[in-house]
Image (cartoon, rainbow, N blue to C red):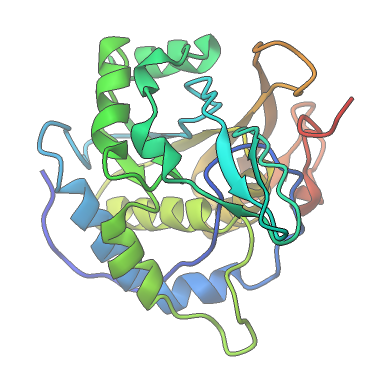
Length: 297
């Protein structure tokens, strides 16, 4: 299954539970943050990977890694998020786009009580995960910003029922990671809080580093996501870190004014550390990527 070795350097960041909020240009400190925290990150990724023995966990005899977000990428999550406003009023907001106002305090514990199994699967991504799960050369990882204590088991069971069980589920804000990783995270001296959109890409980078260190011959990484900030940071920083790997980035777009109909969009690919648009023109500014699906049309 997994083991317990320590490696060297990475991570940080925040990420509300879901959705495609317009991205904010990431600061140019991803490599420094990764180098400062990699050992801690890899230790804790291994820690979470070893906790659910029902899953296969990390494997090294693979050539492709598929990272899937869960909410609004694989499942059409509809749980309203309760919010206390700065004035003390109560309201609920859309869990997909999280239209928070200054002073709003969302209560994400609502996801511990939701019925995840009632959510409809998003067919384009589910179809791909189902096919990848049958190919032993593919390592399939669900990477989610969820933090509820049942996140890992619920996501595994939800996908198992749909014949698309992953190898590993990484809920980034589950209590063990909040306590052992994010609470111990080292930020550069000139930073006082985590940059937006960094957590998932940093965890992805640590998984790739870990697998390469154990002899995996990774040729391809695919990333399926609906949140623009995670997508922007991943596109900007992961290909230059791993120029020997080919990357493919897919967004799941669903404007709020439409019914629950998600469209998979091939956003970019990377070869030799260089990012390209689908028409093979160089992609020069991924940090400002926005699908616009959380703007009112």
